[in-house]
Length: 142
Image (cartoon, rainbow, N blue to C red; front, side, top):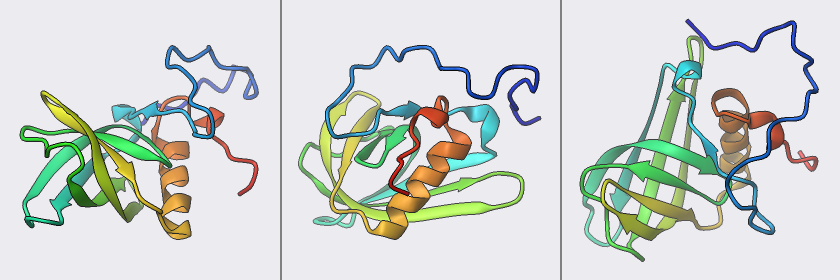
């Protein structure tokens, strides 16, 4: 069953402060809320070797994404990323180029490289609908 907010709570109530440090010039990362999305997966293709893997997004913003996967690519590897999120009615899909910013056991952080306006719009839309604390990420310019 979808995780909808309690209608008795004030809709404009300020959220609890995030425990993640603010990064100047970037939107904060938000964690994926499994109750809001039917499925959300990522396919990452390493451009220099055509190696492909699938993973689960853990957090996302317009600057990048952390992907949980079994065999993460090494730092600085150039990648093409396709993400697909689906709720009960609609599928949202975006593609973006990027580089692996860091790698840890169990996943990798991918920094996006010049995402298109369409990809940025879909990323913000996905964040708004599916991710926790999404109402904090509204960019007044769009």
